[in-house]
Length: 312
Image (cartoon, rainbow, N blue to C red; front, side):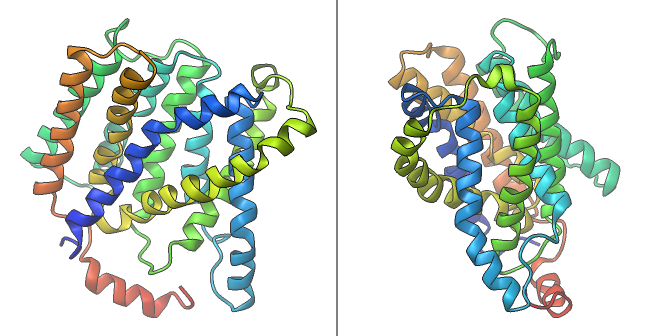
């Protein structure tokens, strides 16, 4: 059964995920002041965690769930993001993108294995359109996305983790997304720090204290104004529309990133980018229109879980 606001949620997720296609703009700004991509990821995850911690503490004092109870979801989603962000330090951008955004494949595979879900013609069509568009846009110098280095493997693993996390998220029915959001940043920060400790050479030297202080307002603004709001929508949506549709719609990041890079950074933009972007958008449209919604009757299941999960 579909959520009453199915199409609105799909639109919100498409916009939130698509906005990450513009994330390279503030990243370039920060890099200009000496904060490389790796250190930028650590800083932004840490700031978001600090901002959300008082709310988590307040919820704990009131006997409500804080997010500590969701380590698997937190490590899958946060760890997936950490792998994706750090993969850019070890491989080419295009390879990282196409290997990470195999998420729809992993989601379909997990749904078939763990949920025994059979897919109809519309789902198969959306997957074919999504992968065709993804390959046309990104696979310029290689035919099959076969990992060739550690960065490739990190991107592939990140997508696998992200798909697994989305599958777990669709089982969480709660009015408040705060526990899931806090779990993402808490366990994601731990995963980012752990992974970054293995990539010290690739991270480069830590920025000076003066540079960090001068960039602190921008990092705070980026975390509060972008990082937290977009991830709130992204982490909230799988439980409302299902992991399968979620995995298709987040490909909007590729479309926006490709178009914005072509318009604002003089990156190549031709028939490949145009046709691939159209196919990806068509995949999202097909899945949005014909998807039955989440894997459960959301309204009745929501009420039942609310009675059993106190304080959420």
